Length: 311
Image (cartoon, rainbow, N blue to C red; front, top):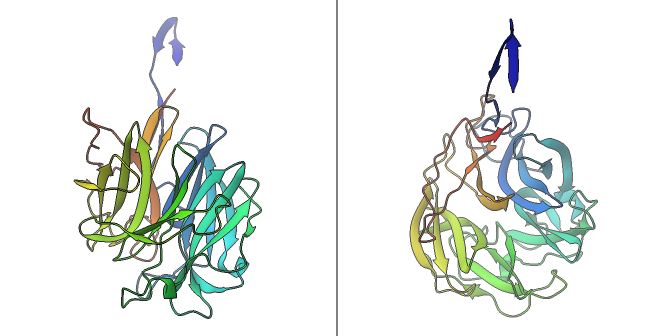
């Protein structure tokens, strides 16, 4: 940028910042993101608890989009638990993935007739919907995983499509699991497998960089984000350490990792909103992610500055 005053011209370097948290007019949590047509679509949970004294209140999921990771457009709620006839509430973490020009939104919700949480899937022809229940029934229910005493072990779905086109779904709380998906993306294709990683709590996320598979997850409680790597989507997974520390003012965390226009990003939530944020009123934030030469990931430093776009 050039400014001229009294014949003297000076050149300034200016930047635009997407301050963290991203949104101050709505509480957001459990981010997932995809890149489609040079646009990032960010899908989040929607915290509506009146304060931080009781528990989560979540009824629907929100969508935002950006072409530069700095300026974001809000599209409002595009899916709700009421859109699933089998669900009775609790719109917890979700994940969207594209395959064959269709968009599949895997969601967590409490089941109306089977005890515990379940995972369902909605489908649309656009990343903004309209989305509709793809099955009419849940994809995964609590009675399919009976090796835990809790009823919230089937949460936090994360889908991944490998280079050969095979799709997988990862999920779990206290017990990490994965299974193949059929080509239609709405049915399991074979048995449910356990994953061997240390100190797992929840929030699995899978991505691939080069030839390496990365499996990140919330670890311990309060939660930090840890990760492991493998040469195969089936493991074994080698624990690599932490990606970030406990998020401010929130004992939970939930990450998404994407590459956009040649740069890598770590998307997460904190309780750091200035408008009464906290454990049940969370806020999504984004910071850069960097790889070391050996393929490991540098520790993420959470900032209030967020992403910078040079102009």
